[in-house]
Image 1: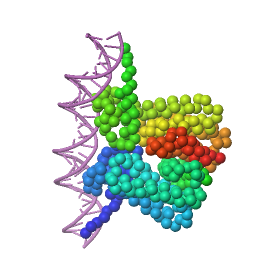
Image 2 (image 1 turned 135 degrees about the vertical axis):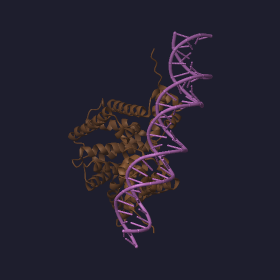
Image 3 (image 1 turned 120 degrees about the horizontal axis):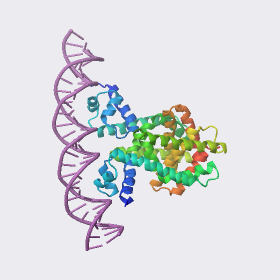
Image 4 (image 1 turned 30 degrees about the horizontal axis):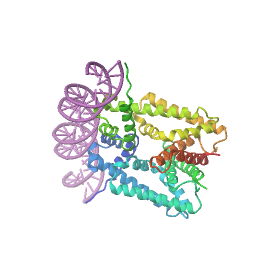
Length: 182
Length: 182
DNA sequence: CTCATATGAGACATCATTGCCTCATGATTC
DNA sequence: GAATCATGAGGCAATGATGTCTCATATGAG
């Protein structure tokens, strides 16, 4: 019988995101300690450091895609989809962060998925531009970078408990739409 | 006679910024290779990995402070000082980036200097707020984070050769002042 | 030219991390 | 209660990074 026990594995993944975010050179012992599991247990779930990294990247991608898909399925415009995406992504910004931190080490298919997500963001921005949302001064690339940058800034505010996730998202959206909007 | 030969040391520092920015776990061999110097030479200038990191942080801080001071010495308002700071910092964003990437590993006095720089940015924003520059909706902390985030975004555009430094700075300033301005 | 200095290449020992292993323990299922 | 499974602790060897060393060479000053 195949049994799935998530707690240990999930704890390691969460601890790894947390640890590597602030200390990229942390050892697996550090991660295991943060996760509250033995080092052996970590190795049972993840054969090697690279395997853990690969899993982290994949989990980050999946969680982000799921959040975005869930946030946009009921949107009635591309602008609204972007706004709801912003709200959905902010709590997961450390995932986004991890993905962008060592793109060099990513496998080919993950790099491809990463590029695909970026293309989808640019696509949504292009459509929102047609809806008249954005200033013609701002290139789509710039708008996408600003979007990501504001997500990161908003996440920082939430992490430091200066704002609630909802407050941060509202502020970020206002800043975004005033900043690059028409 | 004390002789100062900067080329090797400077090459290592520059290579280290470049390498660690995209690959935080890179080895000193990688850094030396990127710098075009032997590993022994790297160790002659920097006794240990930690010493190199410490030097990088210190250099980053000094370069940023010098750039900001130079950019703001002739400013006639706090708003203008912020705008000129933005222009000055963008080419050095990888330095800023390095400083924020592993704050945990910084020595106490560097942490203090880092906090001091942040406080100065917040101070300038407060004064610019009195000049009527900013929306009252945005907290000073948020404005400061947006400022840093836009610097990073602009630097990315320059790095990827999508925009010139001047174009990127102008776009970032427009986005900034529209985004959090009054 | 002569000397001093900086350098590159490489050898070397040391250390930390990694990956694998076993064994005893605790939890869960039947 | 018995059996099965995941786990924690710890030992162990292999690997890779690090830090130190020597020596030959190149560069630059006097």
